[in-house]
Length: 514
Image (cartoon, rainbow, N blue to C red):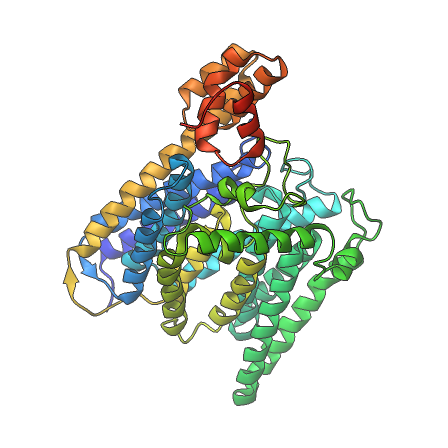
């Protein structure tokens, strides 16, 4: 069926909204943020949720349409995330986690509702990812000054090298497929983009991304080789793709411009690729084993979205090397294992809809898109080794590629459930965007505060912000002024009841658990 003029205009509007979403997501950083990781996590969360709001509004305006089981599974993941918030210790943290994942689901649902052209969507994503990879390569060779916080380069506009590497690795199989199967200029551009992504993943020294890239490339190679047996004409494309990978790997021979602690950084990463006995590999294994205790405690609904950091100190062994016992923030915010974090925080109720969605996406994928299985293999490795879907950038790219992989339902019963679902996703995404904007504003206000009284004003103006409360409580303890620190310690005691340092500090000021 030939689309009408209004349908063409609507699709152009969707394309514009998508390009804006992805571009802003990849480019925006917050230089004034006090907390290092907030400089890129918060603005990208705001970009994702704002884009999800726009897309959900466009899906709502489209009116009724046919829904299928894939849509149902996507909506079920949102409902399960909200259900997991019941009984959470910190309502703001739970809402942040649930609404962020809901924003990813909203992007996926809206794109299928709006009938976005799949191949153009995939190519547009690849283009923006490749441009971001060029910036990362520029940082690595000294042509571009580091953009992210100190110690996070080369991450480019994505802020942190691991986050950047995850996105590049996930997208690489798509460009491998373009190099093998596309024609003319698209094939050449696909091969060039593949070389850039391979090089960018390698210079980040992200071990999880190196392993995932190898897995995805191997999977893509096997599929392409099998296709070449049936269709010898595609062999030239397979050779081109392999040459592109080899060309990208040559970056390992280039001198590193960044100040790594090792004189041979790439060799060291390769030597410790699967090392779980020392360093961060050992720490991740310790955290994974310890987190199983949280899974056993709340197998049905989990401990609450985003609550791994809240509960982990409670179950950690006294000698756990990943816990800074004397700190108000003893662990990182996210567990570097998406799969285990999902099970611990959302329980069986949260896991089942997501597993069903994943299987449906693979089962109903477009048969002419051979990149889907290698992308899924890459993502499968990453979610076991790092935090990808818990971050806005990784979640958004995954949602966009998933929407490009699965055709929209053309037939089926049309009802009013689609507009209702779009409206609920719109409200949730809008609420998440408002919360993200408030967190960003709190970071800016903290950076501008020049006195403790000004910092106290920031804390009162932003009730959900923990950072100013940490600072105010610590300063009061340092000055042995329990009267001034009591209000902040009381709040922290309620929101972080299992952090040893906070519990001890509250007890020293005679603050009991409420």
